[in-house]
Length: 494
Ligand SMILES: *Cc1c(COP(=O)(O)O)cnc(C)c1O
Image 1 (spheres, rainbow, N blue to C red):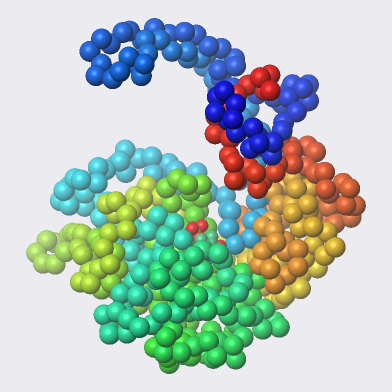
Image 2 (cartoon, protein in one colour):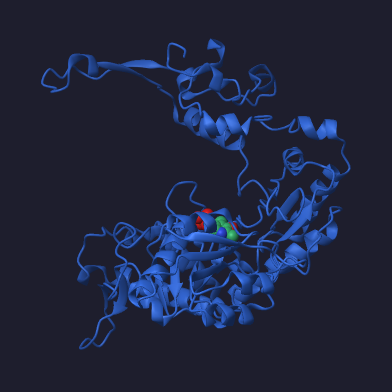
């Protein structure tokens, strides 16, 4: 340990950015504290109940002009890569551009309602939630929707809790297994385990889809649910989905839809019509709300009518009787699993979701999925890497072949684009899982393809030392994650 409590061994693996180089390139941006520090007296508070050594009467604060401050943050923002910098083709994560008008709608003064206000004085808020429940239900082919869960993974957990409550209610509490394809997202396994279930892992067939024989063998009277995403993580549509649904229902299990890939189906096909009983919507993937990054998100859950009584409380419904205009109220579903979030969920995220769906309408949503699929297929046709599984929809998984997919990703940063998701799903060796999304133009897709192809031709030495042109270079991600350095110390101190 050093004087300021840092673990020196931890620092060894951290971002080394070469200060001299960045000063030279005009890229280095000091902290505000390095620019200016002024000692400010804050007055002695003799009445403080805190011990003397825990109080202070002055502190150092930067005192900077507005342009200095604006430039500081602008320069910092230029040291990173974001969805406003260029294409961001992370497969499965669906990093699409979020139109700014949804921010404007969420910033309207009327959106700033205190959640403790009376139902009578928040009718507009309740109506928006009611209509959003309805939109999402119709998009997914589900009968009832809760808006509460704060992320896709949280939605999964709610969905599995609802499934458990349903089985329990029907005297089927002995069901203790959830079946999940090997190619599924890690959150599916985590959800099932956290829900108290044993995970039964399902292999894929040669074509990359659910192996029906293996499914038959996995299903039993202990099956609580099968969790699927469709198209799957290879972008392949599960052609046998109605048969799969029948097989699961025949043993009394439920079919869970992981909504992360809904972009491929939006406005064209509905999980409910395929036989799914419960699903989550990743609004930050499909309906253009910001990815949370730990901040507020939303992962609404839809269910068929048999499961509706178990949804979290409260939900919103039209009140009965009397008034000439419809009025809305909160209610607790009869056998609710309880609350899963404060108040009604992350309200402003839901406002953005609503604004996006309302603006696009039926035609716009169908157009979005068409372009998402077209863009993925165009991009795949332009790159030199092999794409072993077809026909894919909104995303594809290329193989980096002899190259290391992680090195390919690092090197792509040097060409000014964000790389795809790497090394997953594992069924494709050195996977480059790519989803350009519907928002990118042909010119941008061509730029992305050029970056892929430039890297495809490079040798290992170049790849292993990349990136060269970014603010931070190779980062030891494992040490950075295991021993994060949480306090700043100026570079000169080292
Ligand atoms: C992103 C993702 C999830 C988890 O959703 P979050 O909203 O990130 O919690 C689940 N399944 C798949 C296939 C995903 O891509």
